[in-house]
Image (cartoon, rainbow, N blue to C red; front, side, top):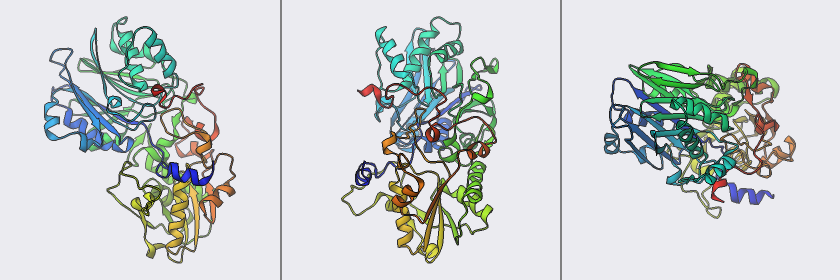
Length: 483
């Protein structure tokens, strides 16, 4: 694939996207929870900016009554104070989405709400199943009619189906977990219970919080901070937690794997999660500082200034500076009003999408040897432009350091790492990549440093090594249901 084609087709797709953020709350005192979910989703907006939704229920009201609203856009675009006022209920789930499997349409927005024999289920899912296509076909042959093209609906159907044969919703979730394979952090709202479940490998994060007499489940601890809740603990990989006023938090660990088999997505720490989040006891900010320190130890270079590509490169750049003694500075001004979704300039336009988002502080870099740190290089289309911008602003040398190893393989677990032929590192040496992006030197984080970065916990390195913790699907699962 020639570079021109990559530029034209993928100009704005350089940054990886994470699939979703999930949030659930049960207020045992009976207070309305919709506005709290709204603020929780606001804190998780970075995890998905295509669509969002909230579903609530009154645990003292009729069993089948769920009020929900969802739409395309950011949280503050989809919800108004009047809408939130109408969502009355003391238990609820919320979701913010970026699509990796299933197209970007309102039907595919979550949470999903199912009405069935036992009442209602509200479900919010973060992750990707690797066996969704076969599970879906199996359900279709037994008469299931699907309203969406997302794998989350497959999970909801399996829970509903199992619920008919089990004594409780949590048992139905457990049975569904025997069938589904892949990455999932789930929040399930039943008429009288809030349930959280995390896949046995722990790909995606999920934590528990408490505020007064309300319990919360959320993708990241920063959402707990935003609503003034205290952190209780993480949901363990493979664990199912059931939250009720009668029993508080109940735990089922029958699906948990030995610690050595756990496979957290390392990119949560490198890029996806907010820096003020803690995942499984590890500070995301500290892990990024460490990655920068490791780059300084393993790939030193003489320079006058260390800068980060905002936002996720900043902490790693600070770590590099602390370790090397080279001053840390700001080289880029970011337009705070550009989200991950904006009307993209066409290739023929003079406005570059990179320049719309970032501008260089000429005074900071002019005449200097600059070390520029970014969290990743996916296709390389953004990196070469940023290097060029630094040179045009007068930088004498530009040395690029990357706080992750080179991407060589696609991801099937809820991250949109693309097919191999679209990855700049595929079939290229580091020297060849350096030439493509135009830097004076280039170095990546060593793969063996990833474990040190997060205190030795089990993690997934498949996108770097091709060593998948679960066998990859035999068919393309991304958007497979539109075919």
